[in-house]
Image (cartoon, rainbow, N blue to C red):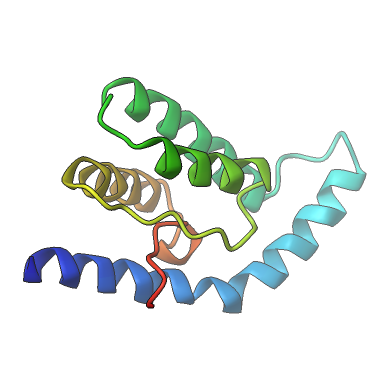
Length: 121
């Protein structure tokens, strides 16, 4: 349990850094989307990667809860920019969140991009 709490705390700390970087990414993404011939912005590319990885991983893991998947889908539908917290509540969801985190960080995304965060309360 302590290990899970440490992992969740680490994910939370990394996720909080998004406030610092997301404004610039959203501004750049909005400018790039105005020109349809422009290459994908980094924010759009990260979202595309996250979406692809999540689809692949979700197929391999049927133990993800409906609420967890619905929150993740809301994050994706926002263009991966809304601060929608996707809280893993089972071991399968935590394992999935950790795999997604590793995939995205290996692609160059920072941990602050990820939506995996549990509200304190």
